Image (cartoon, rainbow, N blue to C red; front, side, top):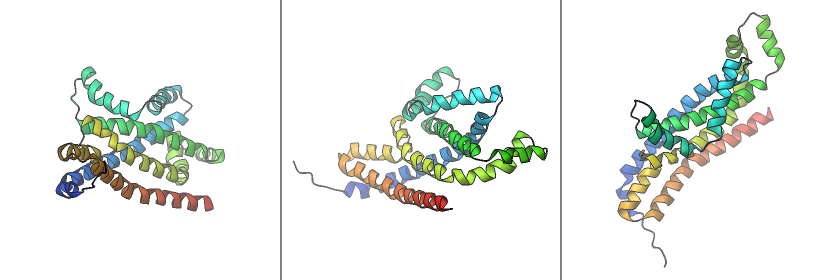
Length: 220
């Protein structure tokens, strides 16, 4: 049977979709900011030679890198409240899952960036009497961050796409709003196509920017 495309429901419910888009961008921005911050701490711990820092950070990274993000989000929403005295809403559960996953992956980016700095830079900082933390903050990270930017930008693009997983716990991001509208209007083809196009319109320019930045960085 030939399908007749009808996007009138899209216009009639555009306010819901705009709310979903706003929530998607908020979730992505919060998780990216927190993930990069905590990733820096975990990455520094992974590079440390102290067992009390290295082993806990390594276990954390391996757990969150090698389990699905969807499982992490659902665990925080359904399981975490059972073993803790805290109630947790959909936004908090999605933020925890996506942030911790981003922390694990970004920590490896930080660790690789730190490793890429010549050993002489560490020795120079140590010769000046700097502590490990001061060497990282004042000598190593300023140089390493420039090399890590392309990887961070790629991670931001991936994180933006992963926000759609929050729809499974009824967080009203773009995918969930489309699901609600399609259920009411009986138009899943139009709604999910529209959501795909909206994500493409946001992600594709970012992906092009990342590629351009990577080429510019390699040309240096």
